[in-house]
Amino acid sequence: MFFNRIRSKFSFSQDMAVDLGTTNTLVYVKGRGILLNEPSVVAITETEDGTKKEILAVGFEAKTMVGKTPGTIRAIRPLRDGVIADFEIAEEMIKHFIRKVHNRRSFISPIIVICVPSGATPVERRAIQESAEAAGARRAYLIEEPVAAAIGAGLPISEAKASMIVDIGGGTTEVAILSLGGIVYANSVRVGGDKIDRSIVEFMKDKYNLLLGEASAEMLKKEHGSAIPTRSMNGQHFHVKGRSLTDGIPKQIKIDKIQLCEGMSGPINTIIECIKVALENTDPELAADIIDTGIVITGGGAMLKNLDTHIKKVTGLPVSIAEDPLNTVVLGCGKCLDDIDKLKSLLHSAY
Image 1 (cartoon, rainbow, N blue to C red):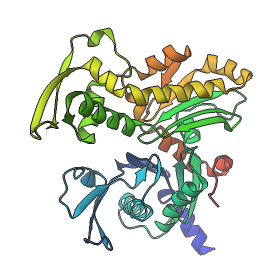
Image 2 (tube, rainbow, N blue to C red; image 1 turned 60 degrees about the horizontal axis):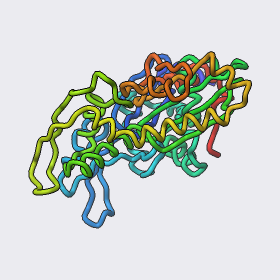
Image 3 (cartoon, helix red, strand yellow; image 1 turned 180 degrees about the vertical axis):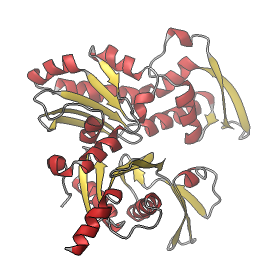
Image 4 (cartoon, helix red, strand yellow; image 1 turned 90 degrees about the vertical axis):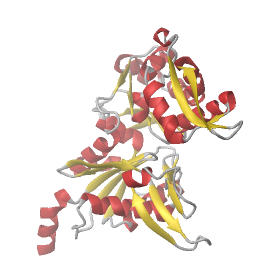
């Protein structure tokens, strides 16, 4: 009884919601808001035979090492396409973030609400839950990523009215139609910001014989990228630096913004097709609601210039960007954590 009183007294600052993303991990602590937003990157050193690994850095510090490490050090992303690719490293990363959030003074294991892509397999869901529990969670709950995004965006998902959410993350794009507190239809493709970056890398390699790193491609996407060409881009050029594949020396070339749009078009078309498939599979009554309520886009991909305009042109529906697209999912997880008794039906376990 005494322990329960102590636990309830401190639990508000212990329990957390985690958006474990391919690109970034965000942590929301109950009663305190978002306390951590760091890259999902871990730098490790390992023996030549690969039998022993040691964590050197996690998060921001590790990201600065990507593409710049000597042979004995690797900067890796333990998540790929929204799910865990390296169980051991993911567990260490989650442990690091938990300790960082609680300033290494935590003595009561937290409840953790963690989001998963709607297209994740049972094995992938179990891996995510087991990583959270192995990292010190007293209890780990899973929530579908589009449900968390819809809650974070303030959509009325508990009403008998359709809400449509498109969450474009680093590894996946989640498209879902929700009504009466659940997912009526969901479609998930393993295409997101990372695939757009890789598409830029491949485009520069094929068209200009110039090799870029993915970090450079991401910077180009953010500074000059657009989902569709616009009239204002005519004649606008910028410089790209990389390594020439012809002679192997560093090189700078000039390209125009319309060409960059061409290099990004493949993954963007896949995302658009995912949205169209969801609309084609929607019941007529719900489709009628979406004409009024429109589509809400969230995630880092929502910040790509003219993406909302492109989706609006293709679908003919109203399209809006969530107020805080980068934090929408973790805020939705946090709302479930803050009101877990009321929203527990949206949470589940992998076993």
